[in-house]
Length: 185
Length: 94
Image (cartoon, rainbow over all chains, first blue to last red; front, side, top):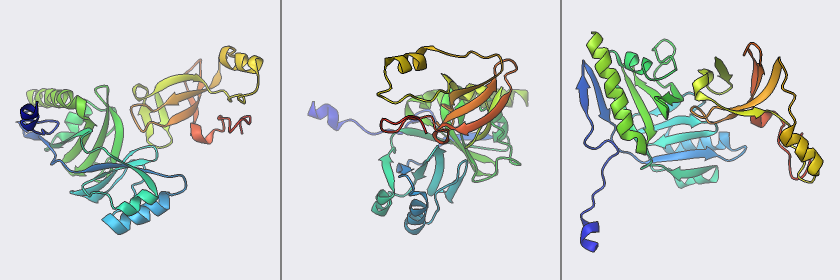
């Protein structure tokens, strides 16, 4: 038994599936970073935002927004919650919010390319064109029946997240949409 | 059919799940008769009805939606937490 356990190695959610490049679009797995769900206690929203600013240099995001930058980002993640991606949370945050380690719970991929918007248009019932969905905008929405988080991280790139157990389905659905788009030229 | 989530904005119906009529919850000690009415009796109007939906595939919030059952027109949406439906510690709804 001990020998078997010794041979187990941790793998990322999309290990062996990504990256892929189809028709000028690239789908890759994001570098795995610590992820912590922050759920502010009642009346502690402002205090949490100050503490977050002091410790990690970003405010608590408003609904449908992300703050920070690559490597240290806070993404609005639903009613009264946001996901801190990158930094290990400063212990001071715990006074204002319930903190839950979700590092292993979500698959995080990055879709990049000129027509990334057109790929998402096939999968998500939200308008993600740049004139309404700018860098720093995020949406909790449905992606082929999966609960997803979609964030624009660049003019031509999106961060897409689903539960880790849906990683293979996410890759399959994104690849299919990328192939369909490429086939139409 | 779209529902304007107060947090996320107008979203497609597929992101939401339906609960039923938005009824004030009786006090826990209101008695069997009041609870029987709460559980079983519905107005079933042809017209505006207040009901509960959850933005399940979005932000997760429960919403109180006023919907016209004839036309499916959405007449108003508020967060359920602001709708004063819940009983508090044995009291009636706010």
